[in-house]
Image 1 (tube, helix red, strand yellow):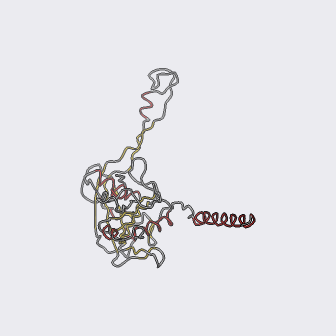
Image 2 (cartoon, rainbow, N blue to C red; image 1 turned 45 degrees about the vertical axis):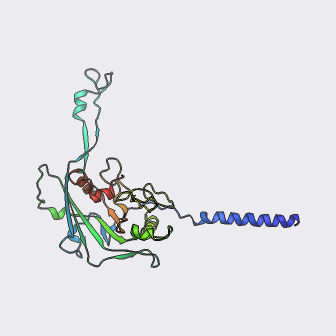
Image 3 (spheres, rainbow, N blue to C red; image 1 turned 30 degrees about the vertical axis):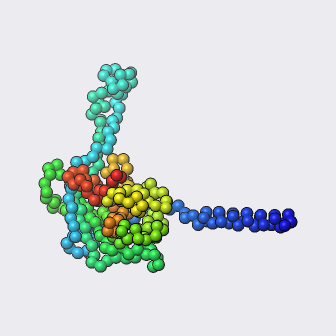
Length: 298
């Protein structure tokens, strides 16, 4: 084979290799910034329960909680002095008594919380294109009321209706169970997998997300007995920071799955719903499922 023929073959192979390597880069999805959902079905977060005319009168469930307000930080304003008792012990420091009077403590949350849930019989919809859509049903509307009382009384205030506000919505879907997945190929795309992809496209990457062949993080029901089993993350978009009391976004998004039943949940939740879950877990209801979905990392 002459040199010109060899050179021609070499260049053809090189360009083919470059084309193969460039293809994934061209297909790489663009980065999506998280934008909190503003509400659902034409209703904004914070709207009163009384403005939802399609919901039934009776809720499908009601929960209550109480908690003390959380201390978030202390700060003070220095009142300078030239002489006398000083905080720093140095000339030009802070007057102790005057500064003490200006000590400020900030608090968050606290008081009574009531969560009520409603659903419209038969309401549901398809999320995604027809060929790979996931059916979301039922749709559960959540309303939170919160008020402060120094004396713990199990009586709702007379203005309860003006406090009961739209604070979350829960979408349920059915995916394959762990037993069913054991009989299917490892690369089988479950409804849970489809839901992950759709939420990634809509909201971007959740906290701690790494794309792997398998997802090996926390689950609501703990680890499986068989190491070869698939494990399913609880993915959280804009989770709580700092004290862990609530999300700092107007609403967060959480995806979870119960592998034993295949029942999946997509939850839109406002800060008030996070506070309710925190109060339940830390003031009398250890192991609260909503808390585990929103807050828990272990």
